[in-house]
Length: 251
Ligand SMILES: O=P(O)(O)OC[C@H]1O[C@H](O[C@H]2O[C@H](CO)[C@@H](O)[C@H](O)[C@H]2O)[C@H](O)[C@@H](O)[C@@H]1O
Image (cartoon, rainbow, N blue to C red; front, side, top):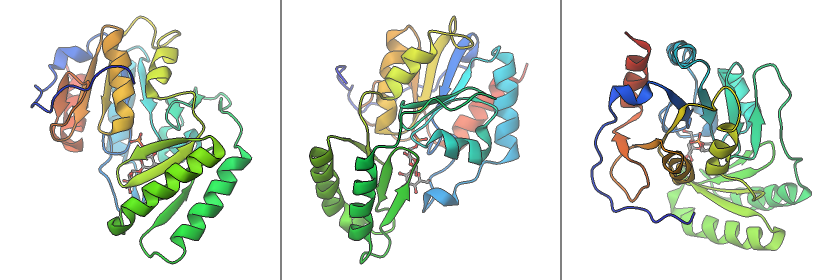
């Protein structure tokens, strides 16, 4: 990312009229759903799907989920009816159409084997097998963070992969895309084209999304406590995001 992250000052809450005319890009974990102990523990409730469906209709379809989760997992979670970008900008899907995804590289299988070997004697360390990437989670055993980071960086160099840092997570994936490139691509065609991009997210992987949204004349909304960010506004937590989105469906 070429832009410089701004200092961690408290940002204002987004005005509700920001949603009028928006092309809305929504991160998933930590933005639409609270973080949980393990990836599998997260569920999507009917209220959230109803709010997003209503908001998408009000925005003439200009609502996309842009996540680090794979598109297949997003569909399993209940988002199959939405415009999707998965695996940090590497995958795309439109409702009813085939998933546009690069192939799973043999290197990812090699990394997964190395992650499994690392995790095998460390209770609480979890390997997340994903469609075209693989994650090493240490939320259940934070004492292994440094070793997990060293292993991820070593394997990334060895296999020419990208390390994607997340919350209590190192993920290895092919490079060449991020959430910013996903926003740029989706803004070039219907239904997102013509809207003002607004990206809501909580994690470092969302900063590229904020950067491109701002560059294209829109805004980023950071979810969580103040930290260095390219976002313009902030919301304290998932509940505030959901309240904000629900307000956008009213009136
Ligand atoms: O871009 P996102 O939609 O925010 O996805 C980023 C990663 O989210 C998931 O991991 C995070 O959430 C888990 C469940 O709450 C949590 O246990 C973990 O510690 C977090 O890092 C997901 O498992 C990853 O695949 C996503 O890349």
